[in-house]
Length: 122
Image (tube, rainbow, N blue to C red; front, top):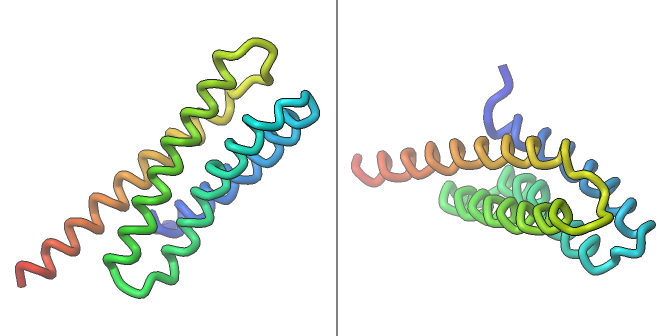
């Protein structure tokens, strides 16, 4: 069984690759500003998750995962703009992937907070 931390590394990387591909389509359609914003936030999720894997402390790990969660929210915002704008490519497969990342991050953040609280109460 893959741990949540390892699973999040994989799914966030896979999602970043899908975002790169989607943004290339946006750029081909001359949607440069949205493509740039979405590319930054969509790939930053995985970058922060990877950075968290080498955190200096459990608090640092938690901080990086919280940043990744914020990037999920920003990415969702840009995807919803694409979804509601006319003549933009479909985001159909991106939102479900993003929602699964959001759920994983929420579980990781929650369990990490619990570990921190338990260690403080020892």
